Structure formats: structure tokens, C-alpha cells
Image 1: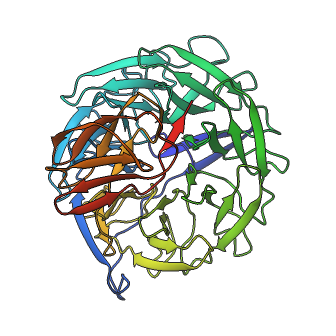
Image 2: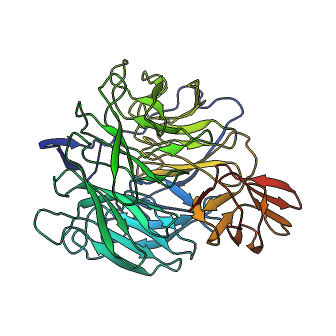
Length: 475
């Protein structure tokens, strides 16, 4: 599974072209209990083509307290949409992309990111001036500006078919492209909010090939990512790259420890990075979960076996209980995919088995809303087999999240939460900050002098809320 173009897609695998075809699966009947005790699953919305089809992307929580995502296809012209959905399931279309070759882009496969000014930034896999993908800015009211169209010159030295973005502590956005660059094996790029793009690195095969997921910024200020292919054995890598473009390959997969990395990493509260592979491992190529340190120390935490999931295209999210949560595309009781929990040491529990009408084949990972529940999407399934949006509650309580997740002293950041009205204190790793309560879901503040990397706490009339991950204070 990789980048899609309508019903099928072509992938250049470091010089070798492979063709896959997506086959729509029939909605399966529910034959056995599909969720673990103490788990509440709710299908919030079933897409029906007019409002979108096939959400590859996951969701993000916005400063308005709602969730935001993208569908790859569907809508007025069939080329994807950006949507907003409330935690209770009321969906609003924010923007509809045009047909292929549309100048503003087509086919978003990654969720947008929201800057502190409230605007959304994202990528499309196709469209733009050269039909090789775009970077766009979208206002909360639905006005879209194309910031960059990839591949203006022969050979696409700036890359083509971009993945999602991460908003970095320097205020710019960083991302990857699946194709293009000096070696035609993909790139890492930086783009400003004004649309100035810089190609930081071009992959060449042994150092990785075809990154199909975005980057994350570690608490040390460096960026971390994966490549779907390439490396010493040609089946994928984990890499580190600085803002100046200095790349280090941290791990080359060999098949026994996983193959074909489709998803981004997540940094745990212990400083390690956690990720998944869509194939490889000892159990009929079912995929794995792994951890890796910034120094390259690699550990396989779990090998999927089909019964507990198969084909892990999604990354992980660390919940407020310290465990990691994720999805599998296939496998489970009905072979329609699963939702699972895994401890940092590798003990896995299947929380939910999809069964067609409730959603089927989740390609993207989960997001934990600051109300404590998890939200996600499925690629197909639902009432019309066009995909769905769902929520999953495992009994975790509310918390606060910070956007961006790292910044320098004196820089403005947003704190997201629920029931923030009446907050009396905001601290960055114990250092008090002045702040403004904008709404029940948003506090604006600046990183205070003396703050260091650590957790953020907000005192409200209903109790003290802590951030789910450490906020990185950068130079």
C-alpha cells in the first residue's frame, strides 16, 4: 500500500516500478463481539461520496475545539475535500478540490496542520501547475491559497507528490516528497508560511528511498522520519535530519524487523521514537511495532500475526496513560482492521475489530482529543462503503495539548483543551507564564523566560490538566 491515484497507483521503488490495485471490500457482517470491555466505540459519520470518499488522512484537533481532516476523493469534482467534524459527529465541508490538474491541487492524503494564527497548512498528492502536488494554506472560513506547486523543472529536482507537513519551532513547515530530487528517490523540504521552498535533502537509495510519511520534530530540535524503501536492504529506513539538511540514517530494515514504512514516528515521553512497519516480521509479512533511540538503538516491540492485525500503515499516538494506540488496515476478527493498544515494553491488546458497517480498513492513525477520547478515520466501510469517522473511549480523562509542540522562549503558542474557562495558572515545566483564555477550548500564551523542556500544566476550576507530551524549549 502506498500513494494512490484513483483506483490504482504506480510506485517507483528505487528504480523498479510496481503496480498495485485497490479492490473495494464488501461490508462484512458482525459475527463476534468487536470490542474489549470498558471500550466505547462510536461511528460518528459515514461518508457518502458527495461529502467525500476514502479518507486516507487522520484527524487533528483545532483551536475551535473541533476535529479537522481530509478525504482523498469524493466531493463535487471527486478529488477530495477538507472537512471539519465536531466531537459529536456534525460534519461541515471546509473546501472542495477540483478535478485532476487543478491549479490548487487534488487528492489530499494527509491531515492539515493548524498554525497558531488559525490557518491550516497541508499538501495534495496531485494537481498544481504541473500535476505533481502542492502545498496550500486554508483559512478557517475556507479560502485556499496555493503556496507551492512541485516540479517546475525537468526531473523534478524539488520533489513531487508530497506527504504531510509538520510545523516546526522556527515557524516554518517541513515535509517530504515521495518522488523527485537529485536522485529521483524523494526529498526533504522546508517551506515558509509565505511559500518559499528549500530542498534540504535528496535521497539516493542506500540512505533511503521514497519517504511516504511526514516528519516529526524531536525535543532536541532535530527532525525524524522514515522511508518506505531504500537502505542497505532496500526495504526502508529511519533517519534523522537537521534544519540545515544534514541527514543520518539511524536504521536500515532487513525484513525480519519489518519492511515498507508508511507512517511517521512519534516521540514518547521517555524520549524514544516509536513507529510501525506495514510488512515484514516473522509472521507472514504482517508488520511490526518498534522503538528506536536518537542514537539508533533499535528494538522490535511486537510482530503482528493477522489475528491481532495485519498491514500497519498508520503511526502511533501516545495516550495520557503512557500507552501507545494505533490501527491496522487488515486483520482482526473480521479481517477489516483493528484498533490496538501497546505498552512501551511491547504488550499489545486489541481494543476493537472493525466489521464493515462501522468502518473498514483504517489507513490513518488516531488522535487523542483533549477530552480524553481517541478519534480516527477508515478508508472504506460505513453505511455507503466510502469511509467513516469514529471515536473510541477507553476511559481516559481530559488533558491539554500545545501547538506547536516545541518553540523558543518568548514565542507565542496555543494551548488546546476542554473546559478551560476560568483557568488560573499556566506553567511550563514549573515556570509560570502569563496567558489569555480565549475560549473554553483555547488559551494563548508565550513561552516564559526560564522555561525548560517538560510538561505543561493548566489549573482550572475543575482541576489541574497536564500536557500529554513534553513541550520542547528550543534555542
